Length: 234
Image (tube, rainbow, N blue to C red; front, top):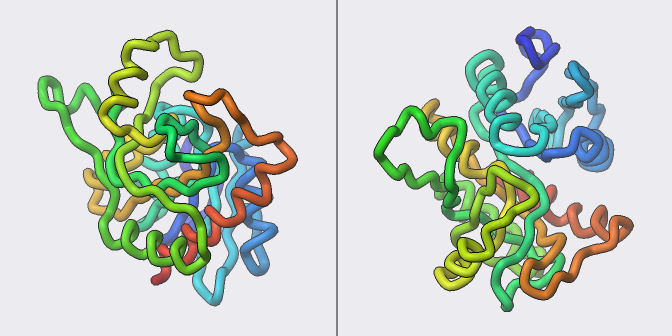
């Protein structure tokens, strides 16, 4: 057990999918895993371990934002031996050719700051995905006929952004979408020699102000979870 995860030794699989919302972790576990067992519910952050096509998988919430994800990813890696961590979540599109329900595979993630920024001091570290996972996810998504985009995203440390000037520059430089966790996940994975990837579903659009109704999000997110699972065990 750790401060934030109540699982016992051996309860957590080496492959962990990390949605932000703990209730989405419950939904994904019940929908995709065989015999899922709840292994954590400390502070309401749910985690479940089961099997997918005979492979052990844990689906564990990360909370919202990089500080929250950093806590859970650190403990999953250092205390429970997680080796492959895949973020599954929503994002806001920042390019006109990216549409609602499209899938984004984040090759890199830019950010203003992360919980790891103090380590690097003056260095602008460039967090990136594991190439093997990225390639496998692309193959899986392409085989499913999903609309896929591969490229850089932005991990914001605020939800209510008040920097339209910064958004303009990101759009200008081809940043595909914004979310709030991937940069720290990629940094921690690099530090500990693990594999990481963010597989994201576009739920809203910063340019058009479109957004998926809540009832439509679940079916769209199913593709994302399936892509992540296929990539993890390719």
